[in-house]
Length: 137
Image (tube, rainbow, N blue to C red; front, top):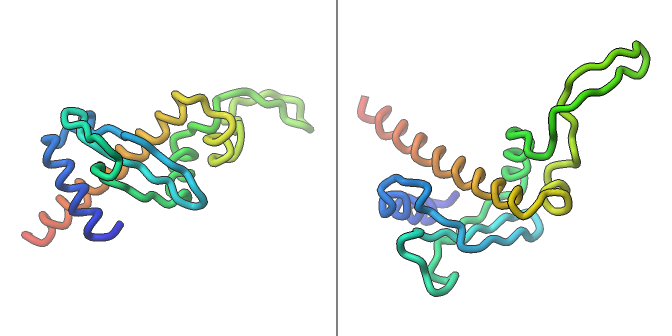
């Protein structure tokens, strides 16, 4: 993430008093290798997307989150092909990107985008706070 976007994201975090639930995804777009989220404060809705903060996320980070959070799989049982015993395992529905594009419901897609946003915000705050605390030590 470039410094300009980082600064704009910090401004948004501070303007919502660190209350992530106030940050809304006004719109989204998944084209090629980039997921774009347009962000705004729920208490200060914008008239156009041009007024929203545009956040570009590499698809590889988004698919990594989907897999890590087990969004594209469920806990199920399988039978061992040779030894004939049944065991519990995670059963993949599809690869992360295809699951998001073709298998996930609108609610599941929205949850995946919200999870990605929350992860980015959390990492930004934790990284910046850690860096500032570490540099003061």
